Image (cartoon, rainbow, N blue to C red; front, side):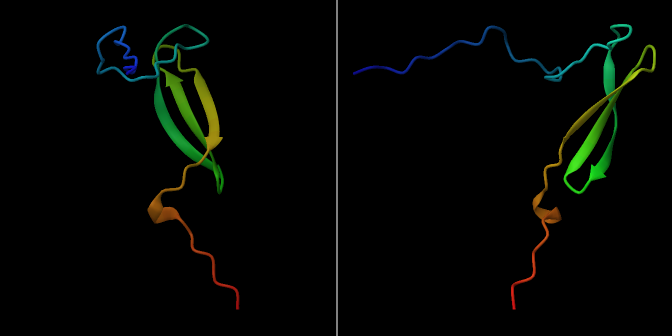
Length: 76
C-alpha cells in the first residue's frame, strides 16, 4: 500500500499578513487605504505608502456575497 506524501512546512505559520507589498517609489511599507467601486462587478483596492504617500491601485473583479446577490424576475 502506498502512503500519501506529506510535506513539512518550510517555516512555522506567522501572524503577519500574507501579502506585504513594498512601495515602488521608496520601498517603504504599503498599507490598505480604501476601496472604490468602478462598475457593478469591478472594484479598485487602494494601497498607500506610509513613508512617502505613493498610492498603488489594484483593479479586480468584485466578489458578490450572498446578501448582495440580485434575483432576476421570472419570465412571464
